[in-house]
Image 1 (spheres, rainbow, N blue to C red):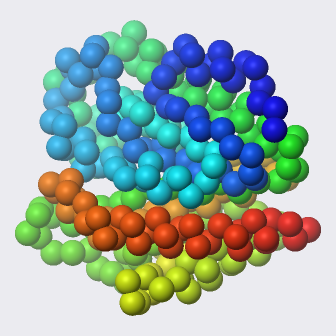
Image 2: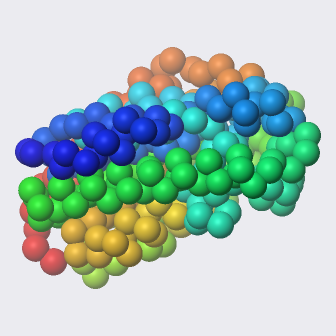
Length: 272
């Protein structure tokens, strides 16, 4: 497919994300995978790197390889959160960030504005990317990959109630189910059916999260062509306090996601 020339211009100026271009109506995003921060931001940031990492989504970049077209975040959500509305994209007070004190002192408006320029550039690039996919394929699906903590009371603290914290939460709060429900159902059925290390994943819809701003924005701007599945994996695949992953689970999750791709692409061809 032909990609718009101005997408390269957007990507050149600001590099808090990277784009891998494929030729398929499936896109995978890992917009919270990034850990880097600009030097001017780092000097003001009170959080340590391990504290930042605990709330980021490491390893989602790896899982995004199930799609040929990928948008990957390179910078930390503590610099600018690409999955929140613009007016909440830079965390200022602890209430914005799970009670964490992000800054030694409130960042000046000039730094916040530069972060928001990055935010705007990312969404401009997403607009160009999705417009190209719409023109090429008519409709497309986005695997919006995330992860979430379930041991917030410390490394030796209790696990969060599994009834309220599924291993995989599919956020579809902004999905038009009349138009895209068959894709949601097929994805969830195939993910549940996958032989996951001799068992099956607990996959449920809208239990913990309903999807963030990126999904809402995409559905608002591409209502007839885009189906975004906000896929949140509970961090059972890693120690969320040390950041150490379990390689067996990382590989199994990647295989589980890959197993859903043929069915999703088949369902995408069904007219609704």
